[in-house]
Amino acid sequence: MPNWELVRQDFSELRQTMNGERLAYLDNAATSLKPKSVIERLLSFYQQENANVHRGTYQLSFKATEEYEDARKVIQHFINAAAAREIIFTRGTTEGINLIASTYGEQNIEPGDEIVISLAEHHSNLIPWQQLALRKKATLKYINLTSTGEIDLADAKQKITAKTKIVAVTHVGNVLGNVSPIRKLAELAHQNGAIIVVDGAQAVCHLPVDVQELAADFYAFSGHKMLGPTGIGVLYGKQKLLEQMPPYQFGGEMIEDVQLDNSKWDQIPHKFEAGTPNIAGAIGLATAVKYLEQVGMAQVKARDAELMAYLLPKLMAIPGVKIYGSQNPQQHVGVVSFNLGTLHPHDVATALDMEGVAVRAGHHCAEPLVHSLGTNSTVRASLAFYNYQADCDQLINAIKETKEFFKGELR
Ligand SMILES: Cc1ncc(COP(=O)(O)O)c(CN[C@@H](CS)C(=O)O)c1O
Image 1 (spheres, rainbow, N blue to C red):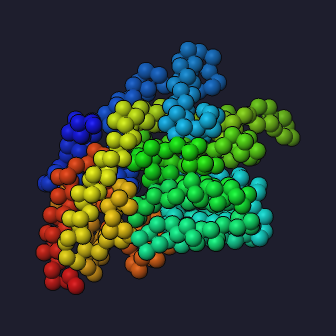
Image 2: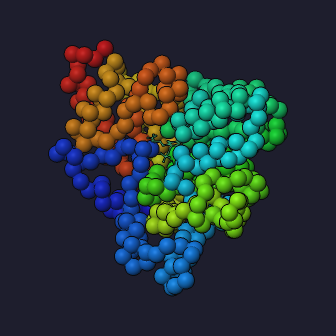
Image 3: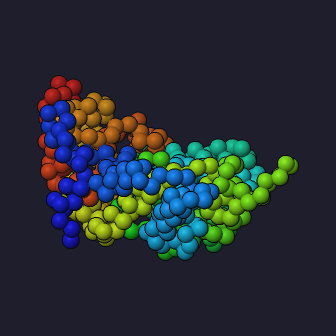
């Protein structure tokens, strides 16, 4: 088991104070912190190795190209993709899902077809499908959730039919933290001739991900949520699907031959990587993956569970705190959303910030889900393996102080 105190020392951002208090960073679902190794790798690339990739005819460019393509292989092995060419570098989860909707979706959705998503979706895995359905006069259907926020498989079996062309679901929810039964949903989709798109944004930094085991046709995630830099993400796609899809964007890098009246496209993955890619971002992301592999994803998963098992009962024990979703810590991977009586979540989050505790307040880009919980917004605490029990205690104490401060308003 890693020495978690030593792990924390890799994250310099944790060593600061905020409003005179030690920083308890509990907004990891929004973006994760970056270990020293990632920051140093970005610096060394720009100091010593920076050059454009794929086209240069000099050593510096060959080296940058080798590093960039090696990064692709690192990601391939991290999620157990069958081939490196199935790894497309994007800006993040949002771009990855939009890429599928704009290419595979435009190519394959016809009027009357059905697209099935769940009520737990983040806007990035909801609006692309909603707008595609509107453009194509197709039908968008939502799989209901159980009372504890899990995907209702019985409802999924009703909603996924022979009319379904695309199923798109989150692997881990960013509001309630439930893990979706991806393999079972993939089987339902495939039995009905549909594909499954998985939003992995909140999963890759908490769970071991094996896209072949999940039977995912596409799997999208963001580097910045898994210790990597912003502006880099990954779209995994099955080779046979990617090869049949038209390009997402047009320009340099993605061509084989350009004539005056038409052009031919490069092979995958470069067909989907128009223009100069985020070279440093990809190399930084690969460094983040190596860090996670050094800690161990099984150890990360266990640490997350240990911290949530410590935090949730203490949260639930505070009179006036309403927990959304399950009361079972094991159902909360990384995140817990709550409210404090009738106080506005923004007021609560501001008060917590005064105590050095960083959390998120709002609808978390999941408005349909949050509204289905009977509220417009929540406070959300989201953990990572580099947090520790003292962060949880600081949150609990800050909530109690917030209660005291607002006691005249608290009902
Ligand atoms: C499940 C899920 N799916 C997609 C996204 C979008 O990731 P991007 O890197 O912004 O493209 C996110 C990002 N959710 C952040 C910002 S809203 C949160 O605080 O919950 C997500 O949680």
